[in-house]
Image (spheres, rainbow, N blue to C red):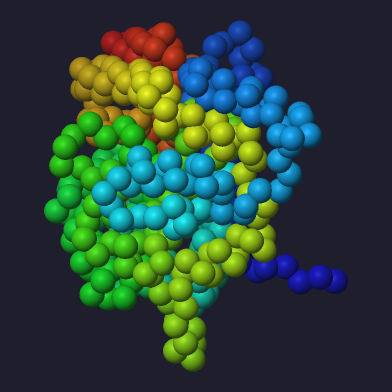
Length: 399
């Protein structure tokens, strides 16, 4: 009989968002007439912007002709897109197009990047944390150190006590919606350089940043190109959750060693991994991503971002007015809400769902330090956001 990867036995029985979806489905089955407002899983609701849709149609027409047909594309992405990304997202940051790898989304790359890294590496993650960082490293059998992010430390984790080999950072943060200032991020880069650590930096929500002292890319910090890999996604930036497109930046100056001390370029290893196990994002999708960098595309996606940030503001202000402690929602589409005293994350999830038909995500699902909190997302419609706040207000009035 075939042997399995025993590390899967160390995982929780179900993925957090699958469990949330299961509970919502069970509630709806028992209460068929109740409308459930989902402020839980971070899926967008605004349509794909017209510039990207037009590019999709044009690309579909193009590949329907013999002269315009595209089959297998370059595994690392078409140059027309990587050049746009380098010129726009990394203007002045010395990132070249061939250091940018196009993929089907940041989640895949965050999970897959461990393929080129030894299972012997020690990993540090913030707590609470996006589950993919933890689960994929558990699957690989790596040791994980948790760095608590609490109200007491302003959700700003302390530098690791035991020097890890790999550090996962996500800012603006999912799930807390909090950020790191430029000076604080520099501390992490300096730490990584001093300790020969690799930072895997999830910057999927950088377009939501509104404050000037919050960096959009880790490469704004001197030296980061020697110790950090950055992951970005068009899912929230341009509503591509269904289209699937993102990219990873692997600077050529980042190296690692094998057990014999032989040095390798992570850029070369990632290229080798991608050309072996990935056939590239589709041509029409990459043309759609390219279109968001046009003046019209930029205007259109930023209108959507402003819409979601307004939802976040309404939640932050509305819940604060109810006496709840609320964090995030200024530079991110997530609002991190402290539950009333004595109520656990899952208990507050059940209360919100069963008493007012509003779904959230229990904070404890993101890690031990998330207990006593829930996460709300700003990705629903304005109407539903306002309705959800009104329903919650009615519960607190009753109590």
